[in-house]
Every structure is written in structure tokens, then in C-alpha cells.
Length: 321
Image (spheres, rainbow, N blue to C red):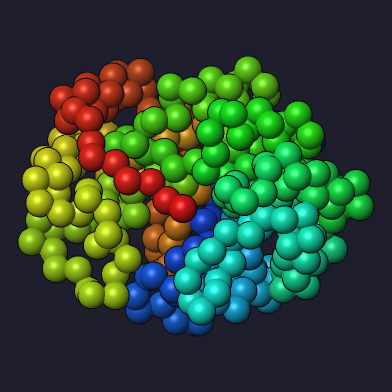
């Protein structure tokens, strides 16, 4: 069994690497098939991962949630499922909707898709500007009291939003983007989480594949590839990032590790980070990510990586919805 970490103040324990189940939905990732997606979810479980992170809007028809239920339904008591509410598709445009009525309806639909009577962790995917976050929190508290939700989370939020939510429905987890090039949460949100015993579950540890070191400098993106909208994949930023990855590769080679293995290991060793959500659309991708659970970076290796980050300098960042 892989080492486990506790979610907030709960008794729920998860592996430090989770399968991020956005790519298997096949909306912005190209060349995704049902066969590959099923195999990827199964490979994560077989590799010792017990934590599966999905959302109501992962797929136009809930494909991601349905996939988890279909593939891992027989292992329900061996896994931890996190899903999210508050974002949905309208004419294939992602829109916010976090009224209490909407949240409760989405939760019921998510449970049906997943084939379960509860989820261990339920996030508000993003605060809705039209609905006070305290009202959304109240709906999730109601779901928690009904036993449909075992712990509450909030994603993509400011410290004020975290505070307002937490005052109504105690938070167990916060989910932001975070990686070597995007460390904004270290300034405010991460300290808040540490002070309040809230777990931090980060997505984009490999920055949508950039920090995996497998994209060549002359890589041509498919027009359907959603990564094209991020500045990190263009122009001077693209070149600087490749220079940085070359530095990481030298360090990884010295350790006898792959670049993504080392990057994920660095992420889950950061103070205050409970788990890293590793997206994958092929079994071999999540197997490689899972190897980060089996070893730890030395203090010297961490220092070398941190110096490379300092030398890289601030990146032009763009977050997610």
C-alpha cells in the first residue's frame, strides 16, 4: 500500500498522487478514446493510487464521472472520490452556476453518474459572482448533513472566499493550480490553509504536460489542442521554459529519474501540499506519475531544483476557470 495523507481534519486518507480525471473526458485533449480512458483509470488504481478527482463538468454528458463508476464501481470502498459542482456546460460553453438549488441538483446527478451514494470530497468548483459564496457553502453543508458528501472543498478561490465559505461550512480541502512555474498560492492561500488545517490539493503539477519535458522546442500544436491559449506555450516564454526544462533534465539524469517523476516528487514534498492531481489520458502516463509515490528527493536535489526555479525567474502565468 502506498503512503497515505489525511484530508484536513477528517479520517479520510489519500495517496499524495491523485488521478486528475479531466483529460479522460476528451473535451480538450486530442486522441482520447473510451478504451484508453478506461485503461488509464484502471492503471491508476493498479499503481496504488486511491484518489480520483473529477467534476460535474468533466465531459459534456458527465463522461468522466460515469467512467469512474464503470471502471472502479467494484472497488468503491477502496477509493476516495472527489467531484465538484458550480460549473456546467450551456451550448458547449462553460458557465458558472452555484445557487443552492443548482448545487444540490448537480450533486444528485453526480452521485447517479458515479453509481454511489456518497463522495468523500465535494468541491465548489469556482465561486459564482452572482451568488454569495456563503450561500453556496450552505448548500454543501446541507449535503454533508445528509451524508451525500463526507467533506467539503473549494477550488479556484481567494483567501476572502475561503474564509467566507469556511465560516459556514468548514473546509477540508482547497484546490488551486500550482507548479514550479506557478506558485502564487504560496503568498496567501497556502498559509491560510496551513493555519486552518485545510489540505491543499493542487492541479497542473506538470503544467498541462509542459514540465513533463516531452514536447520538443519545434512542437506544432494541433488546432484542437486546448494548450494553445496559454502564454507558456508560445514565443519567448516557450523558449525560456525549454531552457528551464533542460536544467531539470540535467538534475533528473543525475538522480536516475525522469523529468516528470522528479517534478511530481518535488511538488508533493512542498510544505503544505497534500496531493498533486496528475492528469493522464494513457495508462503509461499515470504509471509514470505514480512512481513519485515510491521515493523522495534529497535536500541537495531540492536545493538544485529550487535554484533552477530562481534562475528561471517569474513566468507569465495564466490560471484556469
